[in-house]
Length: 625
Image 1 (cartoon, rainbow, N blue to C red):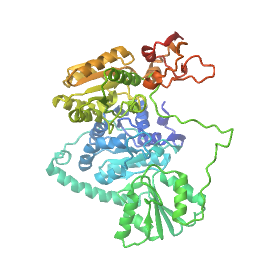
Image 2 (cartoon, one colour):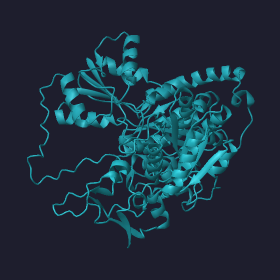
Image 3 (cartoon, helix red, strand yellow):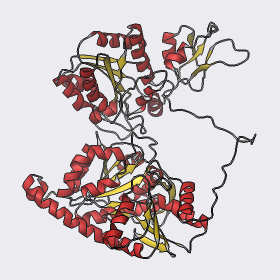
Image 4 (cartoon, one colour):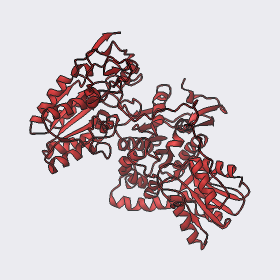
């Protein structure tokens, strides 16, 4: 049995924040869950996927976040409890239905998890999705711990049904991936069947009904504001005339700093968990009770601005500060040391930051070398990129490479350097179309298989219809590799319990109207180079499907083991480094041993035996293992 399905009440579990959200949803009786995988939210869907095989819960990996939200909304308006989870940029994709769903509302509880990524550990921006709550006029909750993540998830369903509105649950990477003790509550059996009651004047968002529903939304927003003012998730604690206002994971840094600085009897803390609508009555009370306020929040000054507006509205003139060159930045995530130092500076405390430990002088200290991100040894993406760049070199032709979001974005690094423009999921196809009209160089775009299903198809249809001329390479590894090997509509090697229909990428491409289509195995360099040459020589839109499974996923699912080991022969003794200069496999490196007999060497622990290197270097050969 999945550990999150335990029926034991009061049991202590050590859970990730994402796992705590899943447990909270189960305790709320969630019956329907959707997602498109994206870090830092991926574990929510991954746990729901496994749980769905052991329970009445329905779960799906949707083709993109818009589809995920609309699918969950269909269940919620039919009266059953639904959850939709995604990373922060995923809410951009889902924003279209979100804005109007706020107007029409729901009947069953609906919770939308948006996982922000301060410092961009695995994202292309660090937008603050608290702004979406204000934009949509939907309630938002922000947990500060794993226990709160469980409690707020359960509460979010109750708030949703009380207001008949979706509720946003905002996390950050640090909260999603922290571990904390979570106490289990009673599991509520899900109600898996609902009924849709027709009410076209509400649920059909034409202008006449939308005007009425907007008014209803604003009325519900005021009810939500009253709920926020009395919510147990919004508290004022401590004593003294100094004030600190905070929310989310930053609260933990504040609590630690107050203790470390020994100012427990001098500081009041406003901790907000139900952050939108902004609880003005509660915050006005807090402002009146202190002389100055420091606001500790990551990314945008949402809380700070609201506090200043509340102070001005109530005629309260006290210093309120947060985002300032001398205090907190709007960039990146915070850490306990930074928060402690800024609190000390703001309240003019006699404090000296501790000196960092100097490990250089300690001979026993183990210094781990920096490891830049890199495509795995044996990754078929590397073979595809090598084939493309080899053909371009041989043809003395330059190209521009729009790329996309996935493992293959790492092609931007030397020596491959096959990513010149990346903005969002699916953008490689559409931006390639624009580039092909604007520049004289050839344009070769790259997109992954899951990303193609996510948002590449519409761009390809547009390219065919408007007769754009570029080469699109679809990198098909048979899984959503970057976020943890989740399935998508084009998987052939499937996870246990996956009973969905397989959809051919080649068939979709041809159905879109592309006439020149080639399907190749990129680990066969000769075959792949022929396809690239033919595409270059043609004067029309061409698509190459580079189809080979992700080796890590293949090994995990099929238990595939290396059949051959590759070694560098003794003839490699002329200081030739072409293999790393143009291919860059991390299993290949220069032999620096004093008694070295070869220029290069292959790390047998990293090499998976793909054999690509042996196809372009005769000094490398295979040996049976």
